[in-house]
Image (cartoon, rainbow, N blue to C red):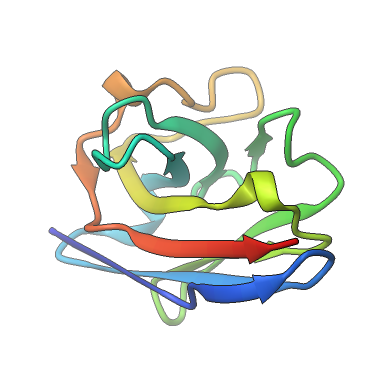
Length: 130
């Protein structure tokens, strides 16, 4: 199983970035894929979920801090999940990690806790300057 993030970088406050998570090694439609972010300097320590996408159902989860600004989507033709980030703020600066867990999920049980995810990417830096 492999999750490879791309699309990070440096952007000014108010700008946009689109992160991509290319998945391989598992059946894409049978997994939920999400994005965590960590600011502690140790990638997984203190990381929290900002968004999850259920490939089986299309259900989504967003943390309150990103609702209305970020949009998650999945493309089963390329086995890629995207996170469109608009109106970025300096407090969005973090390492963003792609995560995956097997199963089918709806709006009622879509996962968001770190312990529920089986696979983690290496992470990618997003820096928002003021």
